[in-house]
Amino acid sequence: MSTDHLKTIEQRLLWLSHWMIHHANHIRPKVDGIKIGGHQASSASMVSIMTALYFSVLRPEDRVAVKPHASPVFHAIQYLMGNQTREKMENFRGFGGVQSYPSRTKDIDDVDFSTGSVGLGVAITSFASLVQDYIAAKSWSGEKPLGRMIALVGDAELDEGNIYEALQEGWKNDLRNCWWIIDYNRQSLDGIVREGLFDRVEKIFDAFSWDVVRVKYGALQRAAFEEPGGDRLRQWIDDCSNQEYSALTFMGGAVWRKRLMDDLGDQGDVTALIDRRSDDELAALMENLGGNCTETMVEAFAAIDHDRPTCFLAYTIKGWGTPIAGHKDNHGGLMNKAQMLEWQKHMGVAEGEEWEPFANVADVAALKAFLDQVPFFARGARRYTDDKIEVPAIELSSDRDISTQMAFGKVLDDLSKGDSKLAERIVTTSPDVTGTTNLGPWVNRRKLFARKALADAFIEHRIPSTAKWEFTPEGQHIELGIAEMNLFLLLGAAGLSHSLFGERLIPIGTVYDPFVCRGLDALNYACYQDARFMIVGTPSGVTLAPEGGAH
Image (tube, rainbow, N blue to C red):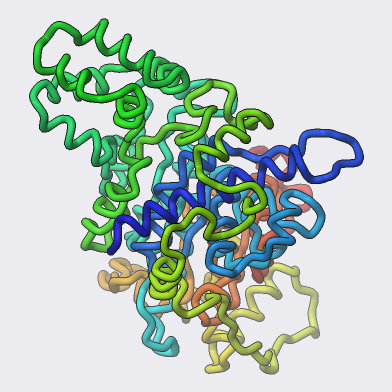
């Protein structure tokens, strides 16, 4: 793996993502003169992580949910690989242009999961991994390599409750092959992330059996720590507050020098360590956090040799590599024309070559040869299809009055007795209301899904019961806890199985109908991705009021 090529790609993506946003706001004609927007700083903090991931680590079977505000970097990657057009890049956030946030239905490039509704793109990766395991366990599925379901996570997304609901459901279902990579730039829209946040979040991941990998220091910093006095520099970095580190980054090398000399000067070797570096070199060292170092991210990813769920905490600088790095207003802020002009010179991009994918590349042929061998893109687009499924005749008596929910249960029960392809591909799920939504007969015949078989102790002890809760890899019901957001996220992931994994499922979810409202965000999200599933709400009538709890 050529570190030089990866560094070149990183700088190309940094430029193209930022130029696309700048062009939309300052160059493209506008009728009303209103700001188009975009997230230069949030993109910059992700560039090194995404370079390492897409051009070194990923394989075609892997699937990625990209942090919404890193959409420009994703589109820049696809543009560099020839999978996105300049026309659509020039129309960023315009009608028919590349989308503000990656979209399966509106973007032409190879989006795995739509993102934008904060937190949901993170959580769906765990359910996609569960769906992948479900398919792999079935006798009708072909031999396919298991991919990693990966979420690129903004640290502010950790405020979203649905993430923690998904963690618990993943633990219950023995989650594997799932990575969450957190862009820990310690800034959100309105301010600086609270000190010590991840110490607490890390405990939560650990409680649900995730491995946590902290990626705090880049290669430059680790080398400096080996120099005399380096241990004190490392301690200073560890002790520095989030807000202070951001402010010093924005002010640059001379201010870094003054602050470090004030705190660490006159100590011989550590003073010499600082003095050996120019202002620019010192700024580069202090901004060389692990998440902003492609080499370090490649090493961190490559070190994972197991399928346990893994969370990478990648320390980054918001706005890394740009004039607005570290500023607390940079979330929605943009470089102005003067800043961009100066930065363009710094990036070595000649006037008129702003859209050129390989501008300022010393050896274009060598870089193209490298890109041609990148595994993730080797097979082209990774959108699969599967055949539509015929519906067999279903026997249902209509000679007497019957409730709609009872009829629904009888339809599934009749299907469960046959060997049709439709029955084979149905997967049912419910948030702890399986029995009361008339799925019981179906589950008794088709069993519950788990990767490892688990017998029903009541049957073993011959205790009479109408429910047979036998777990098996061939089972066709996935039981969920009481969290409607998880229900719709699982239905969304299963409803994309034909496209993600090449095997069509017929997902059916049941719920008490007033509680649909509790999962509407995830329901909208699933529909926006064009996921195909059925949701059956049992009609409550007057027995269960819309406010929910008043049974």
